[in-house]
Figure 1 (cartoon, helix red, strand yellow):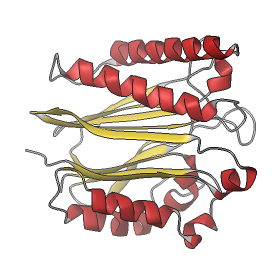
Figure 2 (figure 1 turned 90 degrees about the horizontal axis):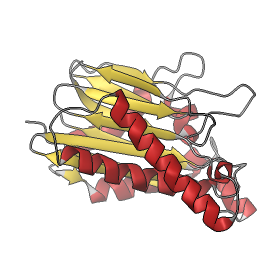
Figure 3 (figure 1 turned 90 degrees about the vertical axis):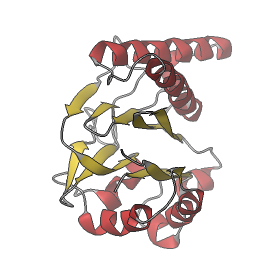
Length: 252
């Protein structure tokens, strides 16, 4: 039986610090079910151009986490496409409610979405916008399960708030993986090849090594703290000024 454990951190980018604006990223990682163990990772990045993008990302993650927990209280089966669309519709309703309270359009809460749900035998990924999900198989090879998707123009992407409906990509993977990484676009330049979106093995192997050896079950708080410190380090901030959110999961 898988012993899922993870390290997760979300840190503000230096660009937001200079502008005096809030962090736009939010992440959640949790066991959606303990028997059988099913891990769930969610990240969302609020659009920098959206007035309440950071709040939108928080609503996205919180709303979806509740829906997933409720779903797995009823079943052990992995969710299908209609389930994901119902969850996205619920998120959009929540964003509309928040927008109405502030007398703005729902687009003011524009944010991306990535969710990974992993069991021992398979995993499913739902993805709207940029950021990515990568996985390591039991031979030690890394592959990208879901790549960043940019919009029509440079430095743009797709959001949950897009009308008439968001551009969601859904993929089911029956392969057996023992590690995953889920991250927002602030990590892309140090984690993925810019041309192919293939994972940089030299980045992920050292990052996962302490987690592979961890005796934790669930969140390894010590490694999560160290990951946060790493994301705020000068070496990382010199390469990216955006918010940085990264979830590392291992069952090795």
